[in-house]
Image (cartoon, rainbow, N blue to C red; front, side, top):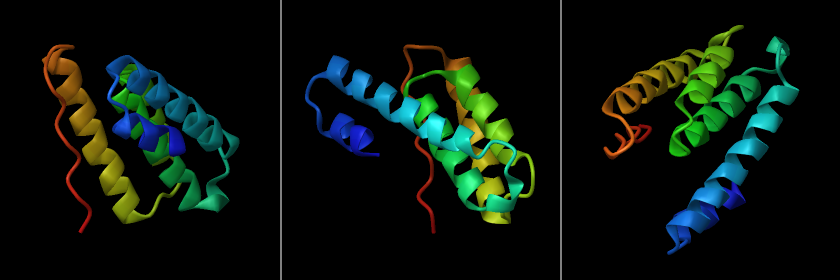
Length: 110
C-alpha cells in the first residue's frame, strides 16, 4: 500500500494516478495468489477487497466488479462480505455517474 499512500500525498494528479495504478496492480497480484484458496479466509477476501477498492480508485469499474465477485466466493467472514457488497454498490453508482462526477466515499469502519 506504499504506492497508494504516496499517491494520496502527491500534488501531481498524473503522478498520483500512476501510483494508484501501481498499488492496484500489486494488490491484485497478491489477491490472485490466493485465488481459489478458500482455506485462507479472511486473508483472501480482504486482499480482494483491497484490490477492488484500488481498482475503483483507478476508475477501472469492470475490474473492481470482477475482484469483488471473486472476493465474495468461498466463505468470506460476514463483515468482509458486507463490505464487499457495499463496495459493489458504490462501484455501480460511480459507473452510472460517469467519468466527470466525484466518487462516493466508502463509509468508515466502526
